[in-house]
Image 1: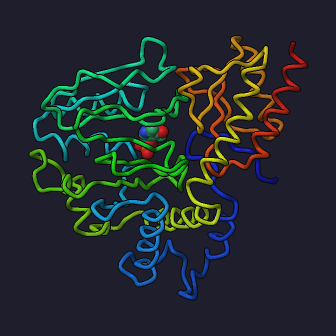
Image 2: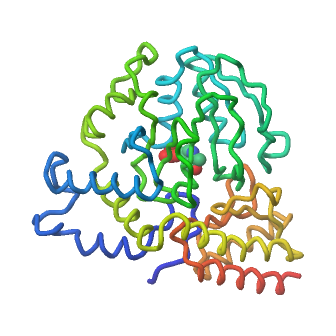
Amino acid sequence: MGRVYNFSAGPAVLPEEVLKEAADEMLDYKGTGMSVMEMSHRSKAFDDIIKEAEKDIRELMGIPDNYKVLFLQGGASQQFAAVPMNLMKNKKAAYIITGQWAKKAYQEAQKYGEAVAVASSADKTFSYIPDCSDLDIPEDADYVYICENNTIYGTKYKTLPNTKGHTLVADVSSCFLSEPVDVTKYGVIYGGVQKNVGPAGVVIAIIREDLITDDVLEGTPTMLKWKTQADADSLYNTPPCYGIYICGKVFKWIKKMGGLEAMKAHNEKKAKILYDYLDESKLFKGTVVPKDRSLMNVPFVTGDADLDKKFVAEATAAGFVNLKGHRTVGGMRASIYNAMPIEGVEKLVEFMKKFEAENA
Ligand SMILES: *Cc1c(COP(=O)(O)O)cnc(C)c1O
């Protein structure tokens, strides 16, 4: 069986080139006579892998020298706790609730201090991003927290919130490396890599150095204290070595593709094909306010649950897989991350047109 067009929200499609390279190196990585899975994380070969990966992501994102890049484990969800543990000096933080992942982070933070919901789009099933230009942010809040791209609902911040001088913390799991980013606007940028960057098991955290201190909440586990990880260059314990190695290959692939400007152009072109069709279709409808649409996750519905089901079944049989929407939204969702080729989206739209004609 050949490769399918995989529209999974995560773990998600990876560049075929990267998978082939990894396959070629599986038994003997660069003359070491072993797989990267089998080598010591203290070896010269692995040291080169992690250093090179850090160098490449720094170059891609233009990460300034006063930010650390950490390769951690525990997924994005682990950082829902690590963020308050490391940052809640005043035991207070402002959260903007734009979907399930933001809500989960907000609920986790409540265990450690006062998490204040300063805005929410729950009133319309998270189908938009609230106006964040003049929020009522408590003076003594330690940070303002956002989920920048909402994987489940398909919304994305097009402008960052006005934090009124407070540190901005962003979960970028589902828009990581999808477009250029001004790192200096954030205190912390983090994301699980299994959406756009690599295999599950790695979370990358980019943290401004002054936020990495010994002054953490009492009881913070050693492993969750960012300083432990920063002081050890992400090698305090055994890191997810193989995952980091694949991330490194994806960074090289993005560089070869032309970097984040080129990635953005490629992603805009892909998303436009799908959104243009959704806007003209009489059968399928996008669920998100147009100005807040994500380039990465595109939810849509027919308005008829049985027809949605029929569509997903026929699409799957035709080789377009993982199009079923999240259980809380229903309908469909096409995740079209960096590694989804343009032909994948073109062929999906062709298929949708055919389905529309047959089911009119
Ligand atoms: C998938 C996802 C998560 C959860 O990631 P895990 O690595 O499974 O913990 C968190 N935030 C966003 C935005 C996501 O898309």
